[in-house]
Length: 305
View (cartoon, rainbow, N blue to C red):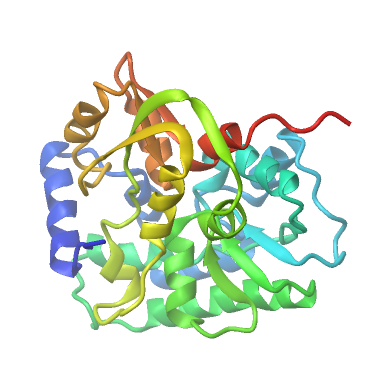
């Protein structure tokens, strides 16, 4: 899948500012007046940067997702990230899928932000690529702390619910003994050979999650998420027809995305950040669905006990 480079990322940021002059983004508001050192301290203290740890844990409980007791072994750790608690419905569907598929999963007692706010802070303040390595060093340390906690639980893998958490983790820990994977990977692994069916329908598929790829992954990154695998899994669902939506940034321009979805009536995305943005702004007549939500339906009802 093609990705935006650093200069394109900055151009997107400038375009968004031009469309809404004097109206800063939520990220800019959060970071306003904070030095790099203060942001680092915030992350070490509170974990997720945009959602308090208390909110994270409350939402997990509110969704009736039973966390394992602190220190109890777990094979697969789900890292929610800052965006995850804001899109609770996809998280619930994902956990329901894992349970149906017999996956041993759990959450960290406390997870640290991947450090993306520090990376984007450079763009907002006019830094250019390579001018400051401190932010990336901090990102590596935050991710490393999460990996250490997962390792103590005996985890074999961390599945990142947020694409940006996964990109940064994969960048700095490509060959880690605790594998760094994007959350749909395990779904492809476990569902690709299973019968999947859904009531006949057409969806517009927008994978999302790529507008700042090289900012987080690095200009020389020669790896990527399994975008073909995520897309091919949809083709295996009996009754489902898919219309592919071209690559856009949902933070800047949503009209072409919705326009492509209008004839279908349903817009599907596997990026939880895009899901939240598109869901909030969707025009009447367009249903926005998450990737795990549709797959849960395609798997069929759970066998009666």
